[in-house]
Image 1 (tube, rainbow, N blue to C red):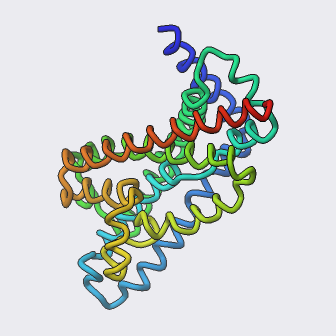
Image 2: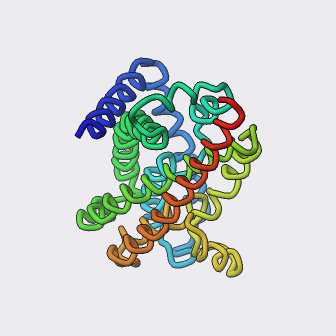
Length: 267
């Protein structure tokens, strides 16, 4: 019970810290909205004179990108620079004296800060969908309440999986000392292999085969397929749970090996 109370307090403090900088909070609306609108204009041009492209209608592809936008900022793996800085600066030594294990503390901090961003993204995506509906690119019938409920379940699973991969990438700093290269590599390959840049249906066959054996598609592409009913929710959750188990094992192994290395060097 005490451990749970510490996690709740950490999330609450992270929420307050994230909302302390009002200008950044407001500017995050533009950071989300502008790239999305550019994507919409691009696909409107692609569909000019065409009824379908690779099995997608214009409204279907816009719905895809509405959901991909909602997912991407939460699930894409990235080096957590507060974690990497704790390791490189030696601040980790202070965390090792606290009752909450550091990996759990790092996850709680990230959940708290991203909960604020979730509110922002929900408002922006909702407003964007309303605007697109007003412009005639979408209609209320393009969205299904049952599909959105299935999507919400998959979103939570994908969110946790993305956080675990981010934590694993951050703990790699124990061994590499500089996370810049790893961060750039992940930022380069993830949009393509997850389906957030373009649906995996539209990729060449050999790339789709590679994606089939990687976890990234379960972070963006498959949750959207669950929404549309193309992928059963139960099967998607089972597959995601398998990747979650592997991610937990990877994070724990990196943490234990990194902690031993950190202590041996002297913190």
